[in-house]
Length: 203
DNA sequence: CTCTTGATCTTCT
DNA sequence: GAAGATCAAGAGC
Image (cartoon, rainbow, N blue to C red; front, side, top):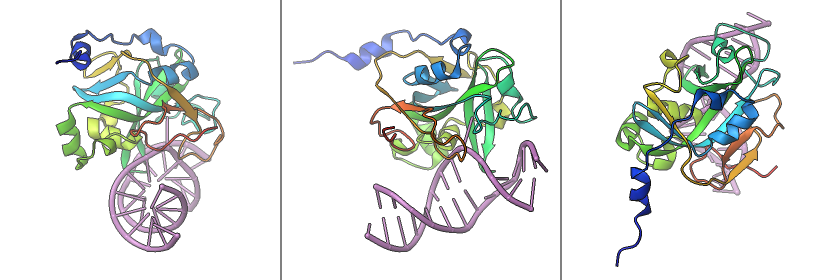
């Protein structure tokens, strides 16, 4: 006897796109609210599982110390993407928050892959779904995001950012890979998820 | 599982 | 000239 096909019902529900106003708030409100939303780039991507928040008065932020050629997008309007090169090798993507003139952004650190799995596997050269997007550099490689996309609006093609369709359990912890403000609990992720870049230790 | 190390190059001082 | 919002591979337990 068949049981309710919840997966099919979800797939046929029209998803709601996040509006620019969603990002025009404190980065510390936006960051946890992004967990469970779905990020797609040219139809490839998945559910956001892990993020970190950075703002201008934060010594670990690229915007700490003022405007430079690299970080200008962070000082611009909310809802655009800031892409930077990490360790000369990888690309990492952020979503800019707060009104223009304030320089804050959310680093996207991990996704649960849901769309375009074959493309992600080809770009990453891997099969394990848990390794496709479990880090900021990995997910940019999997989605095909590079520096040439910096400054684009998240609300327009080739991007899509869709609201949550289910409840999420969010854990907070310290950020990864920084040497300043190391005790600030500004990393957020799906509690207990296997798709995180690293487990979130209790504070 | 955790820890260590090399790769690689842009950015800002 | 030094540091850096990372990753993958290898060693050790």
